Image 1 (tube, rainbow, N blue to C red):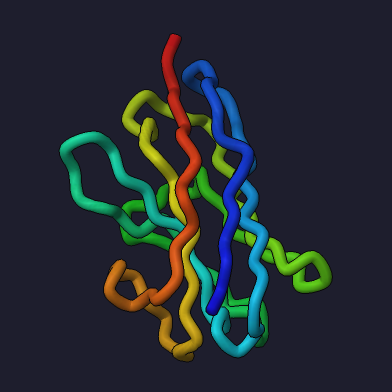
Image 2: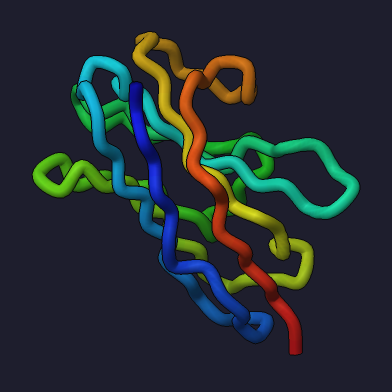
Amino acid sequence: QVQLVESGGGSVQPGGSLRLSCVASGRASSRSVMAWFRQAPGKDREFVGGFVWNGGHKYYSDSDNGRITVSGDNAKSTLYLMMNSLKPEDTAVYYCAATGKLVVGADPADFDSWGQGTQVTVSS
């Protein structure tokens, strides 16, 4: 069982930046790969970026245009999502997810554990 707790969400103006954090607890073998997803009202949950702890491999959504960086701190068991040049369309609840499977997953079904989510609102 893996517990995930996100933080760092909030309200920001267009063009601003935010860094989200996700602290993981539980067996490390159950969180070999972690990822960020987001879900806007009325839309499906959408993959943002992922991180493979063994080796630090990062991977992103096909729609990423360099505004997003995923990173991890193994000593703190924490996954980060740095978002720059935020736009109103980035407004969503952002979720952290984990799986023990060594798969570079980008579908919600690939992940077993989820955090409660943190709201990001981009508005002037």
